[in-house]
Image 1 (cartoon, one colour):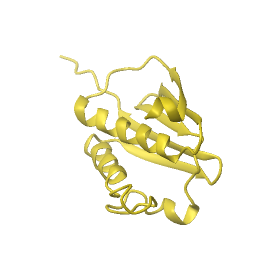
Image 2 (cartoon, rainbow, N blue to C red; image 1 turned 90 degrees about the horizontal axis):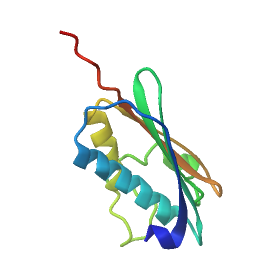
Image 3 (tube, rainbow, N blue to C red; image 1 turned 90 degrees about the vertical axis):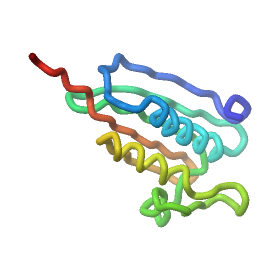
Image 4 (cartoon, rainbow, N blue to C red; image 1 turned 180 degrees about the vertical axis):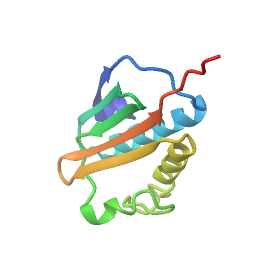
Amino acid sequence: MIKHKAEVVRDFGKLPKVSCSPSQINQVFLNLVTNAAQAIEGHGKILIRTLADDQYVHVVVRDTGRGIPQENLARIFDPFFTTKPIGEGTGLGLSIVFGIVKDHGGQIQVKSEVGKGTAFCVSLPIQKRVLN
């Protein structure tokens, strides 16, 4: 679905290790990239960027889709909330994403502008080295 909707641009930085359940984190990014593709009308771009600071690894998924109206931003992580037409979404994807990120000790932020696109930033704590 994605290759017909968007050019995917990867900007991957060197990252330290994080402690996580790979299958759950895979679900997070699958949901975010799928949502990004669904938000694009016609053909657009999805940028996936990774970077790190002293405490977190950050993964940004940005799209050139329709954007999310400001009045909906506070509710997008609520279970069963969706702006998609009936039959096109359950409203559970972002709720699941939020839960997985929180369960990993991380955080998720969103910025959006109607008509310009949306960016989600998932931040996961860096694995701390244990000294013996």
